[in-house]
Length: 402
Image (cartoon, rainbow, N blue to C red; front, top):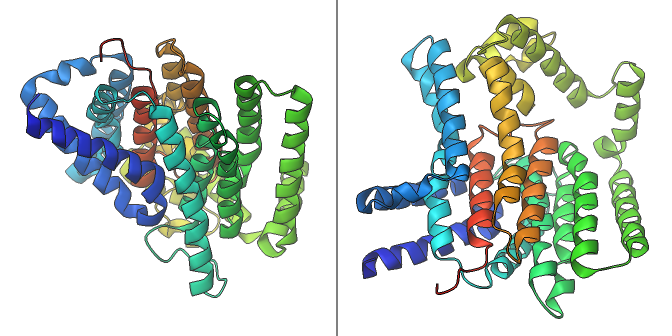
């Protein structure tokens, strides 16, 4: 490897780590474009020196296969050439390969510790970002700026729980410091007053409790008590805010009992969901194409003011309408890939760390995708690919002699 190539790879690794795990909550929607630019540079370098063949492994091939299947669906259903271009929403999955290979080649002995500290910094920065926004906007909930409040909430929770990998990978006092990660991530989420991302907190907390109990060998009674206390404190804080947050119990009760949901946002989402389901039934095999997710759903909307929205605010339905059963299979594959690839990863001392991190991705993207777009949205798609590449490639023990 030339000295120039060595410097490029070294700079790229740190740029990917810092952008993804820390600065993404500050730079917001600029993040995916910066990650894509880095990925393209690394891809060109791999193609030029022939090392692209190293990407012929399960992880890169999985994502390349998903993109090719989606491309075929979009091409078949396209009504004009531009409809196929929506595949570029998933370009980060293709660039997973060069990013993963570069991170893997340059992984240090303490990669998991670096990841944990940067993720903790990202979770803390998310709180700072929200406090600044609240102070600047006088407490109003607004999507102004480089990152929307729901996007920030989703990201803060992911980074906060991801920071816990340091509790197993680090030593001494730092092990306790990483517990601030989930606290900061959940705090940032509550400050955004976003209700959808709250659904991921309980399953993530359970996964984190199991991980901590096994990694730190903590008595299960203490772990259970801490979990219950943490979830209870979160619920009390949410309810104390009043307003739209205090409506959550009523919304859940109405949905379970079949009564009319007396909440404008929840009502709108339910309208989108039933419209999307009807659109899926009209083209159940390969769907209508990503370009026509809303066009296919609009005729089934009760409230036509929702017609201007770009998507259905539900990942499953977006993939179902865009790609039919084939699209649903791709969506399931994206959710399952982190855990499957984590299980297939080397059985080294960091395997538990990788499996926990991969579980965080799957849980967060599933629950956050119930009420918003995660896959197919440039920001969260790029974050998914980058975080998974970091976990699988960078959080590994070095091979002897390297």
